[in-house]
Image 1 (cartoon, helix red, strand yellow):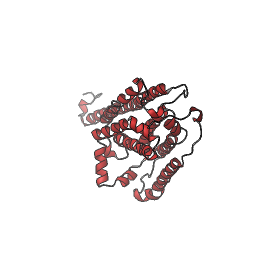
Image 2 (cartoon, one colour; image 1 turned 90 degrees about the horizontal axis):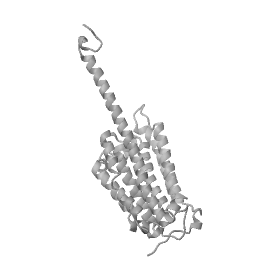
Image 3 (tube, helix red, strand yellow; image 1 turned 180 degrees about the vertical axis):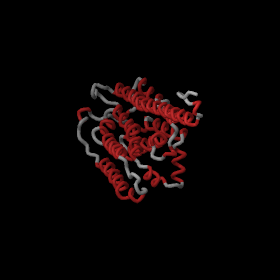
Image 4 (tube, one colour; image 1 turned 120 degrees about the vertical axis):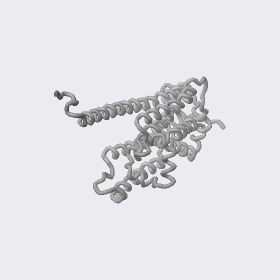
Length: 289
């Protein structure tokens, strides 16, 4: 079965996506209900139901999800430019997923997971090896030519792949910015964990960038869109996959290193102060016999 990209003259034709609107509005309503109706009963007196930063992270996650899933990005990425499709996945993995975790209060996360099998399964899945394997397997799977060529003609497969992409990203990000403290890695391990995520994506990114012919039949087209033919679009997608992911991850690795170094300095300073207070008066710096 052969596929072909859409007619470039129809690039900006508006296409409504009520299923996307229903999803975003439904998530917003559930979020509001959890905070306003359940939160007061699930938190202790004086405990914050939701912080201001969590509210803004949640709003940003919903808006980014809507932007990445609705017209025009969804339609351009699905029918015209694979580079836009790639950018859409980058937003799901490296914006929507971590922002959703940062927006989730700890009490809500504990209520959703409980203390039984779901909690234990999530704790195991978010360990460094399972989380890395799951995330990268989904990355490779979502860029497999058979999958890409068929998601444009099968709505269930398309949304199923998006659920896998977001779900695997949530698992990968949970040890870094998740709402449950005991699931989070120490700062050095967080840096190593994020560093691992930069390795495997270089394979499909290099494959897309170096391929001599079209990798995905569904994006074969006549003419150019935004000055890009099929091969150039494919190369841009590979660059977005490699450089976009690397930029986000390396910036975060740098932030984590700075936080770790700052924390180590503060710990050393407190330790020195404690030792100085415990020392005899004659041994303290600045005291004379």
